[in-house]
Length: 114
Image 1 (tube, helix red, strand yellow):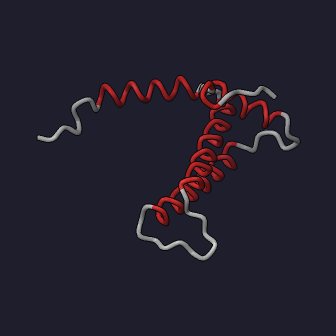
Image 2: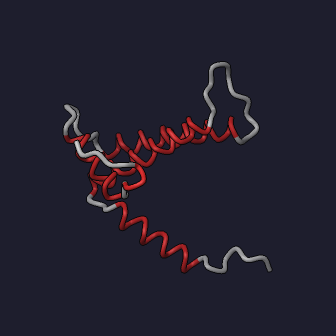
């Protein structure tokens, strides 16, 4: 398996690492709808940490609502997104840049105070 330094890792690299790992596991890729369900689950875990760490919810005994947990849950979301992109033929780096450019152009003055 290819190794990268975190500060040198690109989205293309990471998408490739996800693909390489999944293809070398016995289960391989889950069906796309299963990955969508996993994405929903992981997004819910981000929401749980946010609600308990930054919102009004009080953590349950033993509940880990830390910034470290948030980082882990966000990484899970990105990893599942890369898996979905891989199995649907999407280059996630290109998609991210296209969306970023669209938002920058569309919303350049949208949030200015009037």
